[in-house]
Length: 249
Image (cartoon, rainbow, N blue to C red; front, side):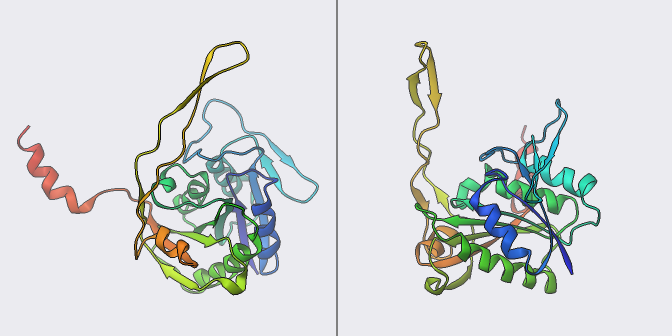
């Protein structure tokens, strides 16, 4: 029996984490630990100045008054009676592709699992209406089982984006690289009921690098995208060039 830790950034009551927990419970012992609210865009943030509190829910899930990273760290270091074999984050309500991965709490939860030495997957449902969480859950089971049988490099996680389609309409799986977007549009300025200025993030930029081989391109064509993400952000191909540049300072 495998032990699986599940988390997300949409919150403990989100439909994606419910679908994922139900699917993976059929193949392993599952502990679901997630934020008590929506933490989309939290990235890798940790709560450092306030205590974390947990709440054991009737369905067996545990909610935490913290970020996705908090949830995974707390679960592995304190809440799990047996160390998990794998961390699975999701199913996110919306894609995590291209530049979006830098901001994603879904990705961050998986990264924290990898930081703590465990295989990890982030899985997202890519689309506008988000009707087919069962499709993403179906493939999550397949990918988890495969990853445990055939591990990948220890400094990587798998970022999985599943088109919002019925299972029988998925065309296959492609290994991809991250695409890219144009610059985000401007902030939206408005006023609160007291007449004071407030600001909202504007729409994300349109897809720019979205052709063959990218995550954007695969999903748009009806394929599941799997992108290996490295924990080490070092641009190794620039070390020599940067050393030369530094010598001229």
